[in-house]
Image 1 (spheres, helix red, strand yellow):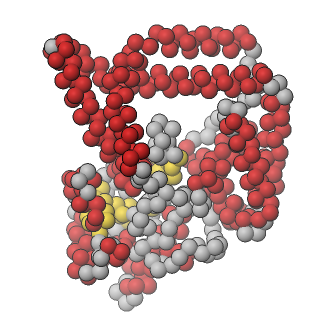
Image 2: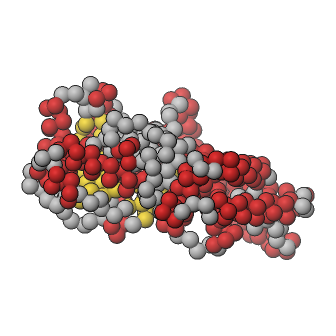
Image 3: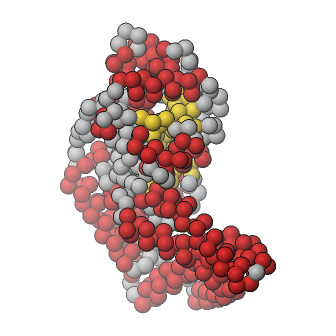
Length: 445
């Protein structure tokens, strides 16, 4: 996880954190670990009845929201929610809300509901002032995949609220709508907003190719995230103005990614085999480390494979949707791993007594971490060996792929030259502000 813009988080005062929502409980967990203040999340009421998630929500003092689709039409319930959020803000704590009102796996921002704006306006009307509205964008890569997923948490500048607060006594609905629209614009500027995960995957590959071919290795997480945001804005701009050109570029990128994946090569790796002496020396060092660490790695794999397999079996049986896959794995792991370790510890005690149990407990954590590192090293050596073999067998492959990369980058340059800087910066995107209304449907830009 990389955090960008953490210096924008106010250290004191009433604060509402509003974030996009792609990965169920994982989104809240990431923000609870990122924001250096006590957060009180707003969660949909049915989650409080979940036997695994409900206790966690009650422990952290989460606020239940009763949504319309779940029969939440009682005005008294909404009044109680706003009253509770006002008291939380009055105490100087932080309310965490996901204004889309629903978790969904696609990397796009759904129409926002007005709950965050209404909470702020209610608190301001009750004398809690000034309340800061802070947008936070979450971007994910394969969040449900163990050890290959990553997240970028981008903290934006606070949303301007003064005019909406001043308007609220006379026109509360218009004030809430205006503030929600402004929040939606801010959130959209913090994420790579595209309609599907396959397009986002291609943008990530394009960013890696551009960075390694043009920019070198000095980019930090913030620079990479900004490149992806600008790329998705260019994609949306050209998709409706130069559809044939953008589809051709997409086809070039898809075929390139498919070919390098099939060959076991990285998207933008240096496709030139190193000298034999360097290759053999590297392979010898890696094999020596693998052999030396084999006993501890086997111990770690043996003690952690049962709960790992049980978690995997549970996921195959439950077949969760993509936006809750990571949440289900975390919850299942929190339950199944301790149970498996207790059973294994009991077996160790029965077989060898107290000293064997003590040895088991002492090696449990280091064995698990070492097994992960050892397994990753083995997989990396396999991938690198397979790629090297492919390059040695097909001597023309490196040159052919390099030529295709140059062609893709040249086409990217030509396409981006057609996009005005204002569009790349996210200003004035047509068809976007209307999505902030709670009744609005997504419109084509």
